[in-house]
Length: 457
Image 1 (cartoon, rainbow, N blue to C red):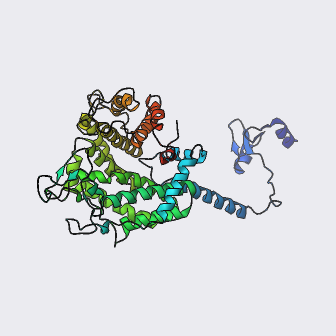
Image 2 (cartoon, rainbow, N blue to C red; image 1 turned 135 degrees about the horizontal axis):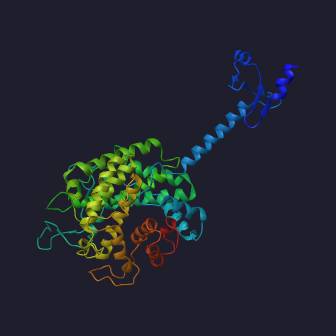
């Protein structure tokens, strides 16, 4: 009866799974139940153990599901470049490809070009004249503005003429044409692979890269000691470093190519080593140190190269000093009204103004990648990239006529404007900069591959 009374005076707390009963404290302490000073003891409700005998063995199913998840993860990772791109908006390009809207003509033109390149032999740095260094693997080129001296019988020493290009600079004696053609071909083949997933294009691009950069018999040495030579005056100039600006865009295409089967991790590791060595040459050579101090776009492009090649190697810390250098360059090159007067002295002043902004946009992209912000940086005297973009805006949209000397007047402004104002529109989404594009797109031929990089407005 006592036991019955204890059950009758108890209650069940179903929310927490406890049974509360009136009981003998000593007895329940021996049973290691919790005893409240009031004399109530607390014990867990007994749960019926469910049998799973009717279910199949779970281990094989879990193993299979885990394998599927791993494969999905690998596939997802493989669709994104290892390090972010600097000159290309990869997500925008994916949207253009996946939407497939209004790109039939440029896509067809791209495939035609890629098929033609596929049949060509790789070009080599060792096929030109012997450089002044005496090493066939050193890049050798005269400056584009270098001309024979008209006042001497043998044309020596050469002189410089701004705004005019000497066809000799692109001749077979020198490496510049072979170099530019190789880079362009790599870019087009990488883009063709991206749009078709046909490995033959990736395989060809890999071949070109190995011949120019990696093969011990044909590779280019990672320096530009003999770039922009002026015969009879010097064997190379710091301004020749501007030739390697094109490598920034090529590296971005290599990052895309690395998603293919044909550009192997071993290839990528070897090319990263080449670019690390070239980056170090930029930092440590006398020519590089001089170019770093240039007060116009040459200085900005120097910083952009060092930052971009460091990012390619995953060495973000080595890119960060270039972001700090860029802040000084913004203060030095941009006036309070946003103008960049150091570029106005050139014969193609509008082109070089855009070119200067392009260097800063690449640096701003690099800053984003390594955790900085150049888009919204302001110097102590309020100079900024936003001011420079705003200053050029009415000229590139043809609302105003460019007042400075410009022998390229009437020529299309080209990809440079599209690129820099696309980035500016992303940086400042509420700005007027996005409206640059409709007027510029009108100048772009319908079959241009530019349509494969950026969505049309």
